[in-house]
Image (cartoon, rainbow, N blue to C red; front, side, top):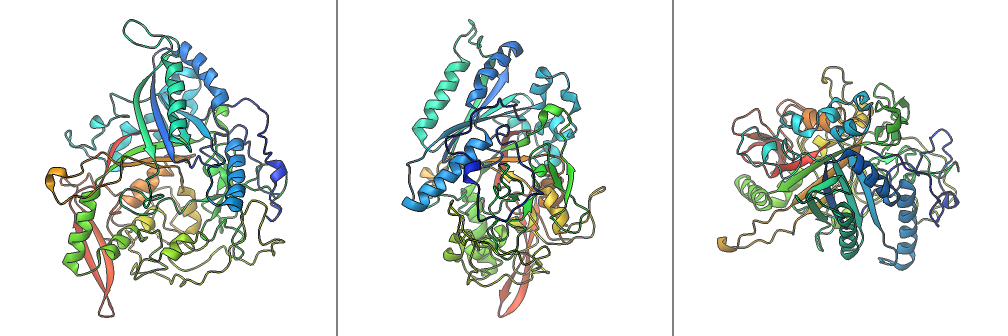
Length: 557
């Protein structure tokens, strides 16, 4: 949860002075309290190096004092947004540059921690947050077998016996700067100790430390399976200052004023930050705001829920599955991988590149997310012409691209219904049935289940070897971090009702082959159905997945 931030002077690069003159005025969108919102929520750290420190509170009084001393170091959305604008301006002039660098800290607290700190913590209305991830892991499909690596009792952090009260996120552009800041924090924690080695000054002890880093070239921006990650993120409605055109997300799609970049729907900020209007699942379009998001306690305004999952990735196991399955069906391994993920390794969407990878498409961020599954632009309309083709922050209007447009895929012939990107975000897909109390699936209701993802890989890239003696068994995977205002209706909904539901979106579609889990089967077997073209005709296959390639090894709410 958020910590309330004291007012401070604006950064040297004032946000209001940098109001974006090329954006249409959006008087009806709220001004967010960017001085009071943590910067990894709004803006996002987007740093190459990160460390997560997991802390246990051992003395509440001392912890309160120590936490107060940390507050001035916590990066706000105001700082992060100002940095991002300055970084874009310098990169536009100089190309890739290390002239501007920063090291930032954010903090999150568990429900159990807040109960020890605040008398009204029971007022939180999200049951998942109050129970914690470990208590609900079985609902997410995590292994039930006591000796399974992914069973919560075997997690490296966040299990029943090693739950963290606090997590610090430290991020930097430079590895040495990161380690220096982590060392400073550790020094402040262990400034004084008892004879048993427990801290007496800070009131907390470090129970786990996790480093993460962007993978080195040629895998920069990719996850360990080799696929470009983080392409599809929601845009945010709302303003940074009182200037009517100083918006959080640049409006770069000239064909659809309700998107940032093409394919990036603009959502009301209450989906991700408490105290603002969110989406209305019953509305006719995504432009209609819904109710104000309310955490329960009034002081939680401008905060968010953070979901953390430490996901180990079995790279050789996944690659062997792709190779063996592709060979069995007589298809290309990269094509089968694209069917599983919904994108080629480069990040090119299979909806726009159905037969082969297209690096040029992948590198065009005005094109690589521009597609729907039904092929309809339900909220599109002709916007008012922009006055400028580019603004002072280098965020120009997207030009019409020359890549093949995505065709309607109502039967899941191009991107399988169980393909990862379609399972996790079905876009404009429609589905008549829904869990009790939920709206039927359509483009409007889908937007109430989105996440702001801030993940980063951990571990070194996999190094294949033909010699079993030198097999690379290193610990690697993804530090999944995501912000939302309802863990139940966002992270858990996506996991339970989409990713792990073999009958979504159509009966027998199968599980998400990347993240899907099935603890209802004693062997954890999952099915995946996909279609390929053979001799000019569609040929549908069903394959059984007999092992997990993504294993939960830690986490917390």
